[in-house]
Image (cartoon, rainbow, N blue to C red):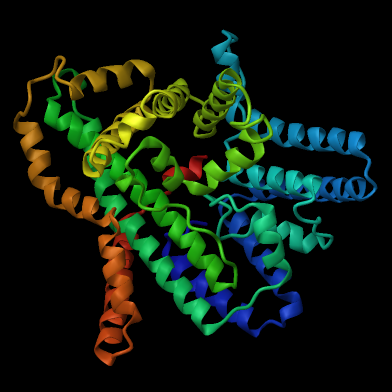
Length: 466
């Protein structure tokens, strides 16, 4: 089931809210679990079996880790933790990377691996977070299997995150409140995310795919840059839109999930960019990979190795393709240059100039990210910088600039805090006129999103593949 379908928005979600409100507090987690399992099974019953196996394995592993920690059996605890992480990683590797690994070492593949389960990276990382947090004593294991299963499978975050750490969600699973304010705030955030995904990302996506279908050998500089800009903004609105929807859904049912995007395109360095983009993924790699490896409290050489491991894994997390690895190494190189070579120099550059160049560097990175292979990425980048193609601006470039220029400028402005700040100020006003404006605004967003839902029969989240 997709969060952008009419059935979910106008039937599943309202019915879920009503049932949850009418259900006694003691069995609300059980209801949410049943709803989540129904949500998963609606799209693929096979995914439900796989997630169920993951839940059972990690539930008992977490209980065992909790017992060993309390008994101070350090060696046994480390062994169980390593086994748990290895089992979860093996599941992820098999479904996402098995064919890629065999092809990379020159072994021909003559059999089919089952399709990648929706959101496998997200629920696997959630499971590993649980095992690590329980082992470290950050949070005791959830002894109620219903509570644990809900942590893994909550329908708000199962398909595309955010990756909510176990220590952050476990307390809320045990106790939380659903209030009129939480429902109202959650619904508003959900509608904002829905409109970002369907209206803006959907419209940008059509332009991007049209540019990508053009003949690359004759592509002008302007066309290439417009395509890269369309994709960069589409990806932001698609994923941040989903994150808003997921966080909004959590809020409706009393959960408080941290924001996953913080206007990354106003970052003044790549370090700042990665504090603002997909925050939950960065926090996961920091807490469960980078810090356990020693973080920055090691020698310079070892610190570079630790960062390299994180960024190779970050690239691979996004998919089984060498373009993702190169994209990860590209960001590693930029971060190392900032950290060790330009740290003091960057402070002397005016902030607006830093923001502009950081945005350009991010766009170049997304060009590698959306390419099907290294050769295409290289050719596309060459066109962006004037090598080959049909010059600076041709009729094709003029067409996309004319047809997509207003949308592009709107998307750029919307990616800044300007509109969000203005909306927040109006929303806080208690006057009748202000509240009528707010109500009308969200009604229009929902109406526009519904129109796109009805017309777009193949809408899907880019990050659902991960």
